[in-house]
Each structure stands twice: as C-alpha cells, then as structure tokens.
Amino acid sequence: MRLSLIVACLNARAMLLRCLASIARQDHPDVELIVADGGSTDGTVELLKAWKAAPVISYQWFSAPDDGIADAWNKAVERVSGAWVLFLGADDVLAAPGTLSRAAERLAALPAAARVAYGQVALVDTEGQRVDLLERPWSPADFHGCRYNLPHQAVFHHRSLFNEFGPFDTRFRIAADFDFLLRVLARDEPAYLPGLTVTHMQVGGLSSTRRNAPGVVREEIRLYRRHVGGVPWVLLWWLVKAWGKAGLHRLGGDRLALPVTNLYRRLVRGQAPLRY
Image 1: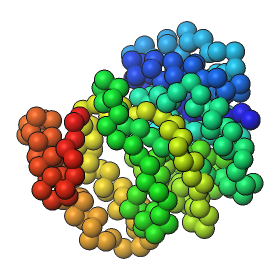
Image 2: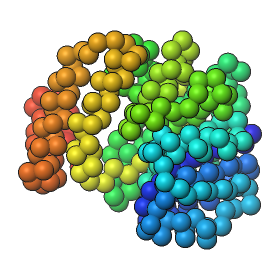
Image 3: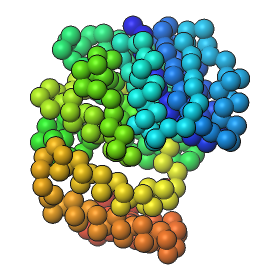
Image 4: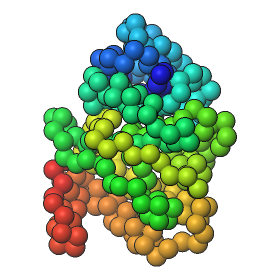
C-alpha cells in the first residue's frame, strides 16, 4: 500500500532537514513524498533540489508563491497517487523508523468504509523530551461542537475524500484542516489507531502560539458559525483569554506569559505547569 506524505513549508530549511531525515529512515516499502514550498528564500529550495530520497520513496517537490498552507495542500493533493494521505509540517518528524509500516498494516485492516483514521501526536520540547501526548478519544458531540479537532499530524485521509468533498477552504488560514474534517465526518466516524504515535511535534517556545491565539479563536468562531450556528459564550471567553495571552507576550515575551499561564493552569484548572 502506498502512503503519501505532504509537507508544506516556507523558509523553514533547518526544521525541514529533521523532517526529511525522519522520512528517509522509514522502512515502509512504498512511500510518496510531496513537498509544497511557498517560494522560500532561505535555502529551502536548494535543499529540496539536492535532497536524495531513499529508493523506496517517490519524491517530488515544487516551489511557488501560494495563498497559505491550505492552498499549498490543495496543490499537493492534485499530485497524490497513494491510497492514504498524511499531512506534516516542516517542524514535524515521524516518531520512529517503523511508523509508516505500522500505519500501513493498521490501515489495510480497516473496513472498506473507513476513510479517516488517526493515531497520536507526541509533543516534544526543544531537547526532544516528550511533554504531552495528543490522544483524546473520539467524542462526536465535542467534535461536531467545534470543541476539539483530531491531531492533524496523525490523521490519515483516504485519497477519495478529496474527490468527494473538494479541496481545503483557503479562506481558513489556520483551521482549514478542522473545516475539512467537519465536512467529511458530518455523518461518519473516524477510525482510531490506538498505540500508534505517528509524529513528534516540537513545541519549543510558545511565542508564536501566544501571538496567534486571537486569530486561532476567531477562526474557531467562524467554524462554529458555519457548522453549528451562532456563537457560544465559551468561544467568546476563549477569545478574551487569547487576547490576554497575546497582550502578555507583547509586554514581556515568554518570560512574562509562561509564569502567568502556569499560575492560571494551577489555580483555575488544576493542571501541571508547562515546561516549554
């Protein structure tokens, strides 16, 4: 079974090196890699030209300005020849050399009607130590209420979905994957692949997360209005918190934002502190 990997990137040469290395180590005998570069100027294009794929990997890449990550994905999907598609970011790495072999075995055993399957994503710090595991069980009510998404870097999409449901909506700059899955899983359920950690996602500093927090919540509100209707108060509260995170970061960077975030987690939510 051929598995297709799509990596979208823009000026991410250093991170992309790790991603490509993890793909080259895979022992699955039939892998297709498509890299969609958005017109990088940091040496990424030179890297893509020079990179030599392993014999078992069908490798292609292209570089051209795009309208964001959803647009890059759509262009890459048009080139896919594998049965299942996995989308990776330039800063993601496959968890182990046998990851795709294990995934292919599990996917081949699924019922023919299953067209979305997902495993887990391990969040790691800058030293490669795991700090969290995204493995929340499937909850139709929470998913369809836009309260949580599947771990995108561990979601395998059957190629037929893009013919039936169309491309990613490029009007979503951040949540295009969530919007697509909400369309696909309006009536069906995904298949869970327990025990399969697909990728390691490096979280590093939370700077970009905090800066982008209001934009993320605004897109979640758009998702809710499109797929559910109206705007629930909880999303408005999330937007207030997102503005607070962004404001703290502007005032003092991670040195201020991280301690305040951990104080809130401990006192209000009873959660362990973040270490990154």
